[in-house]
Length: 454
Image 1 (tube, helix red, strand yellow):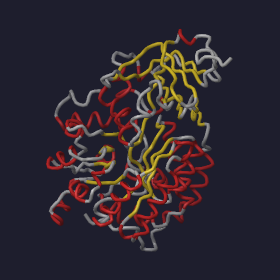
Image 2: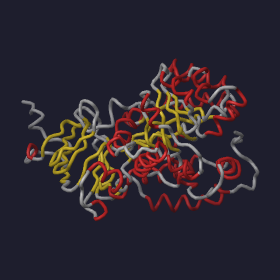
Image 3: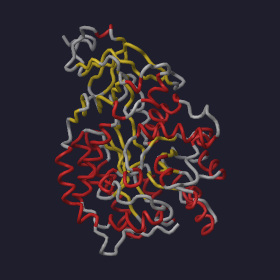
């Protein structure tokens, strides 16, 4: 006789914790002294600690004083760029690209990308990130790292029009070969770099390929106000309007940054036929001294999901989505002049369900609920900087830090337990990466992979 689910051992039971939950109206709430039961990589139930007392499980995690959250999603990054962390400091955007980053990136090898991705995944796992959307080069190497380390990822091979048709073809080839890879943990996208580096013919062809193959698109657009002003001066349209007239808003599209989105762009985005989302990475905008930020409130009002992101560590210095959550809340209060926006609960919503939707995984991730993938983290709130707790949501957003994440789980597999990484050897990665630095950082050749002219 086959045992019932209640009798059969679960794969994993987490008990004694407080669980962040969403109600039928997607409002944030918390269930105390709760338990999460995991089977076959999926959340089987969220119940009480008493209900699972004595229930057999292959593995148990007792987590008093900890909060179970859906794993964070880094909705836009360039993971291998951790290798360039700190090499282009205190520069305006144009000099950052043309004088340092794009000359250095002309040296990249597959091995550099692999090692950078491995170090980035270690950083993200330790910070409670279970899924990331990556937009970079040599993405076969990134996909291999994701498969090995156990994370979830939404990957796209970036291309410029200066590469000719081969760039677009390589992006499509990568997306088709790796879609559904790593036991379903990898999803893929076409990844044109931006409207200022990919011409309209290429963008139109990309939209056609996306429709033909059922692929989403991940692209930088209206990154800053200068780009929008330049596009208007040269072409009479904003970058968002370029996306519209090339057909990219007729397919699912993730727009990185969007700090240059104007009021005239909002109805264009609202009326998009595809699922349109924006990823915001506020730390980089502050560092570049951009005068505007992602208009989260205006996008919210027209129903556009805004996911949290870090961008690459060459600009942001960090892959800390926890920090992005706090900064998003603070920057939005400052730019709107309203201390009631964003609230801590709204920030948590952006960090969970909205981020999952932004990368096209809103039906699988973003909440701890039966049927959802078991991607979750345990956050320790027993430290002095998180006590006492009067408002749990505010404590999580404004007091807790990424280093308070004790355990990170993807598809029911524990990738970090009690701050110990289980799938990546960080010292070995760092040692090998350091050996490669002289060749990677050489700019004496005078080359660059692209020209920033906007």
